[in-house]
Amino acid sequence: MEAAEAAMAANAQGKFWQMHDKMFENQQKLDRADLDGYAQAIGLNMGKYKAAMDGHAYKSQIETDSKAGTAVGANGTPAFFINGLSLSGAQPFEAFKAIIDSEIKHADELIKKGTPMDKLYEAEMASAKAPAPAAAPPGAPSPQGPVEIAVGDSPVKGPKNAPVTILEFSDFQ
View (spheres, rainbow, N blue to C red):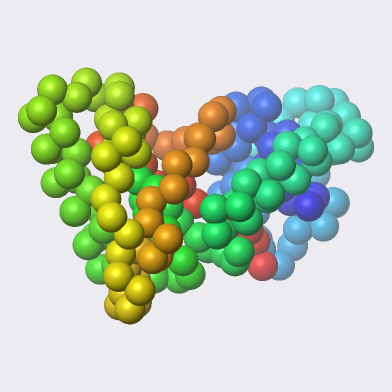
């Protein structure tokens, strides 16, 4: 929980990804003293950071996010959702490529039909494909079919109008 709280405290100062990368590089060193050192190393305002950590300012949000992950089937990590299609566990590049290529093709079709770029994800969810067969091969989307997950104000990389959205539930060892 402390690592997640540290990441959110860094996010509040616009440095989520810097903290994420520090923690990822040091997965075996995530006690409070280590986290405080990473916060200082990435240039956080230590007063604000320590107040957030000591007061558990993000605990409720983290618990809510954890419940949201469980609710959509992210019962282990890493868990990915590519335009709502679940891809669970450590997967080879090819598994991601197959789903992403298919989703880009579908996004291109929606764009040709006049869907504005800023409404692409909503349109994707509205026209969600039928669930994958029960005996889907490894790396294929789960049989539950697409699920809609609100990104909200979560840390993101890339443009807001990207044709494919990948949501990752992860943790550190």
